[in-house]
Amino acid sequence: MTITDDDLLAAWRTGDAAAAEELFGRHFEPLYRFFRNKVDAAADDLVQRTLLACFEGRDRFRGECSFRTYLFAIARNQLLLFLTRQRSNRLVDPASESVADAAPSPSTVLHQRREQTLVLHALRRLPVDHQVLLELFYWEQLDGGELGVILGVPEGTIRTRLRRARQLLAAEIQALGDSPELLRSTLSDLDGWAAKLRTAGKP
Image (cartoon, rainbow, N blue to C red; front, side, top):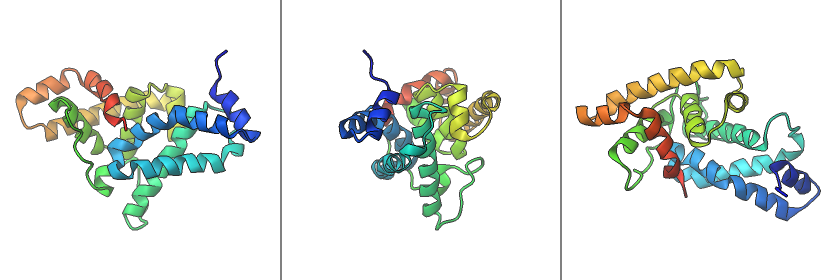
């Protein structure tokens, strides 16, 4: 019998610490991946802050979405709080400002193809919510409904935002690319390179 996230959450609410540990263990790597290309050295701290916020708010979760979706919504909020602190408490507009505007540049991911490195850096130059949208779509395979919950917009808006995010990503790649050959190689399979980066965020 498969034990679902909902099963573990129900057990956790009754005081089962082992269930909480298993639940968080299932989602640690995706959370780490979520933060790794955005804040680098702060990724571990933000994972812990996200899990703590989830712990503190577990009784407020009513099951309107999956636990995974709920967790990524908390992660996005924690990211925005972190970026706000980086800017001396000036609020960040996730629709227009990027993590590259607020946070130190992350260390280069070692042993990546040049195309992957280019896509990584281009992602960081996108507005926060466009970066979040593309990474959750490509790396975590979230659907439109889940993405809508996380970003707080109707599901029908997600398709439009995905199309716009891809356009912005392609434009940033063109701005960063240092050779016509690299640009052709990257842009010819942009979806493929973005999807392959899923392993780049592993701890």
